[in-house]
Image 1: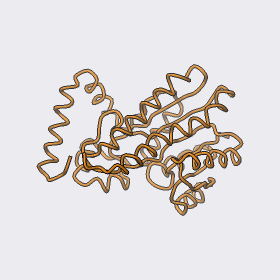
Image 2: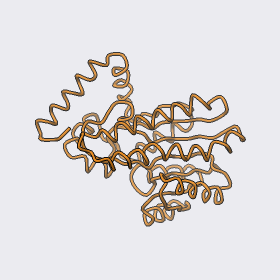
Image 3: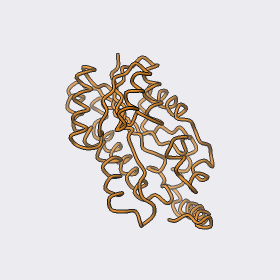
Image 4: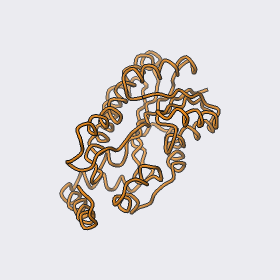
Length: 256
């Protein structure tokens, strides 16, 4: 049976992923900073809880070691843990620092530990939960936008470097998903849901479908592909459109 690790699996998309993977017959290691949530999800799905910090160097090492001991080998790694901290240019230095640790370095540190075994075996799959913000941007949230762009860039680098050696890398890039992050988005909620807000379970189902392929971008909101294409081919038009949205936020008193 396929052995997988899901970080940030105590709530939201991570919980839905862990649940769907277990339902699909995979053996799931559930990781979350919230130890109670990790144990509850593991109990619900017949998984194995390894609570802890999946971003810190020591925490990633402990998680990988515990998962290997339980699973024998890690076949798929879901780097799902992420956070949104700080608004506008007033975002504090510590907000930028923790966003970089969780949204970027967690992936780097996990890949360092996973890749030697995967390369020796000639197979492995690394799935990054990024965001449409990593392909586009997130108005009002510079640290989130920049670090999610970096998460996608790191995933691209992994894929370009190792795909010929049996390593599959995928980046999940949803827009609005009905999680705590969306509930706490304030004035941004309307923008994030202007197309549609999906449930975590809908995202997990799209990820399950994508696991049967080797496609790099996993877009639960297919319209993101069009926005991404416009951004690349007519950047000024895209920026003008985003600025119009920012003006709407300004009119509502949101800061940017």
